[in-house]
Image 1 (tube, rainbow, N blue to C red):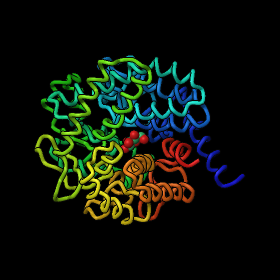
Image 2 (cartoon, protein in one colour):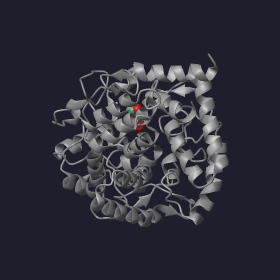
Image 3 (cartoon, protein in one colour):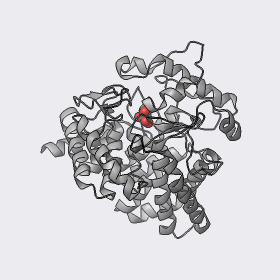
Image 4 (cartoon, protein in one colour):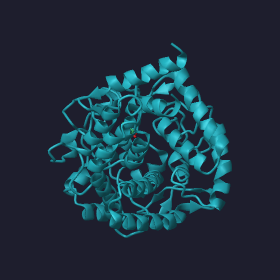
Length: 422
Ligand code: GLC
């Protein structure tokens, strides 16, 4: 077998091994349930060799959808005791237990790719008809529930919702959250070195927020009013924006939901205006914002660069962003580090504070392509491929040495490999 063939077979093996009754765990033990954006990305991988399994991944995720439209960040399909905080801590009493927050809504964009790439068109069309109302409800939930004042910028209530859990962009906002004072046992440290995982001070606050949602009876208005952590996360805002454009495409493709399309177009316009309030002349970039203090976070994370994925940067802004993108790419040996290496908070190995995640690099490469930044896009692709061939299918990679970190045999890394390179 050629090297490429070996890589393809290995990636397929990983997805098959991580398959549990129709959904895929990100990796066994460390993450033993179905995660929202992992499921979406993973479906892209399944799409390459088992289309009906790919659609099943999405259907299983949507089984966890709340009546209000929210698609949760974790669906606890069945009990496993290697993870904390599990369903009892979250306290959501639905038939299928879930967490009480969402995750970056890349789902609809993935469904659009699946519809376009399907070889079994009849299957794709029938699945789309089935899930489209759920996808619409999910996006309505984002705008209604998380932007009730129509700023164009949805808010997020937990660093875990950003999917970039331990990003330094959240440090200051999280520090304002009280820590829990009771003892609990983390389980991530049973599987991964503490050098790679969040510190205890942060974990105590993550758990405080989980308790806060439960004590607020998951009431949207109460949480919007009183949550001690409320941020405009550029990762979520941009991924939602791109996915809403894709949702409009899918509604038109299915020739349905004309009223909703009009409404979604209005939301896009609001975001196109609102995003400029997150632009910083001083930092020559878009920045995340703490909505409680109204302060922009000066820390450049890959979330801030995802504006190009959503094509939300103007011609003038892209001229300013291009040198930053180049510098960011060349500052570390591999790809785009999750935190820009010139920021003080940069740590090449610690969770979301500097390592490389492949799916984010894929999204930024798509953004670079859309602005005609062909060299940058090619560099992202070549270096991502090099990481895989040299270091394997890890959860993420040290941006300076390339060494794989976190969980091994990781579903979204295998899926991106199948979708992007193979
Ligand atoms: C971690 C990541 C998150 C991911 C999850 C499962 O919590 O930060 O983005 O969805 O693991 O892979």
